[in-house]
Image 1 (cartoon, rainbow, N blue to C red):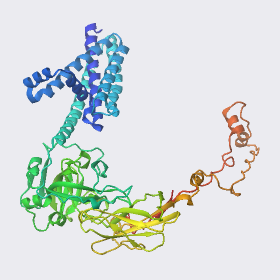
Image 2: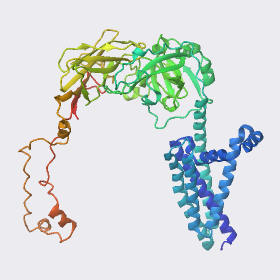
Image 3: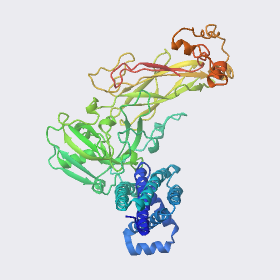
Image 4: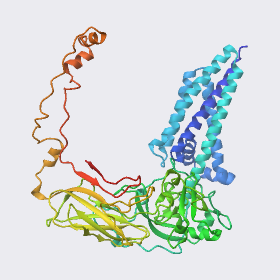
Length: 615
């Protein structure tokens, strides 16, 4: 039975709508990897709101109140469905023009996305990806609709187009719901009012910062603070729906909303956080001022039962950390932080709530996006990293590093031959007692410590190195904490199968000094380029080319004795190319580069920490 033209137009219009929905669904799904404003409907809606007169906005708000955004999206959806249906009708007569029209519509939406002030050029990618998927779908559905008029399969094609449309609606609605939750979380963060702490932290004295070029800030900015977690995509949590549960070995289980948490007395504290994966001399450490509610406040309300020795904190993404109960109930400032350096927690650092516990590595204490505290025991529960062989308690080890100079730096000594070295040391919740520096094989010298903010923060140090001479030198640093213990250069920390970091950080770093006319101009550059070096007689001569293949009787010998046709690529390579074995030699090693060695007791994988490398 041959379908009538009206039936063909109906199927074509439905094909256009289905392809348009596929475009939006794919774009919404891809926008989850970017900002919420990279979704095409959000960007187009924002542009429309910016264009309409203010009086019309007031009318819409007066008519629909807080549902004005929903009405806007519904209106945009109706217009979009009408446009895609019209594109489908165009495809009933000219399929190619319809595909071009849908592509142009998608590109136009991508341009609108890019023009939004909160978006970067990369925000166009979700809409362009949706266009790249929607256009072929439209082409396929229109061709099926055209063939159905000839073979009588119109009902089947109608069902196919309908199924595609329904699937696209479900996919797009799910992605839009996730995007909406993320947008709500971002908007709530902007409206967030930081609670006033009942116990403000002491101010950071100016003498806590070593005034030496190249030294890091004693308080790390939010944008510079290291981020190590297991989340592949940053969770976006809406604080209006967030809650924290305190369960397990407690007298009374608690469920606390974000508003109720903010109503609790908050404190402000300055704490240095450190990652257990930090290499000796690494930068996976940061110091910030935090505002939050002490964990012991909620644990006291819940009533911890006898026998409990651990709190298993859980993140919204499933990560867990095992924190000793003692560290959460003693006098240290273990808090549920809601603010960082005077701002709401950035999303990548745990908004709306994260844990901050001085003296413990982050993998057992600094749970971001925390939603549950389970009071339990180490014998009953294991955490994410504990099941992977890491220590279940994770106390931070004393460590130190050299920040100035950096590896391979060339330094200028002053007229007296003095170079100032500087760095950072930490021993959270114990405090740094002293720092010593050794240059080459000289004696260990006591460095000058800057003013310490508290025992829970790092401290900066400096050392004027007098009598510096031009050449390559090696500097080492070690720190001791308030307990009086100090690292031994030649002996690592004993441990029994636990993946703990080294007990004391020891860093060996080489620097090259140059002063005035002691270093000829251009010498280092020439050496780095491999020039100005006498030829090595062992490398000066080329090897002779390989012997021609010996002729034999077999096919391999016949193939080896053939000559490449004149003008071919093989003949050109044979005439002007180099032999793989003897036609080239390796360039001489690069000169003037520095050598550095890092040395430590034991690393977290259990071996000796000595290593060396050349740059």
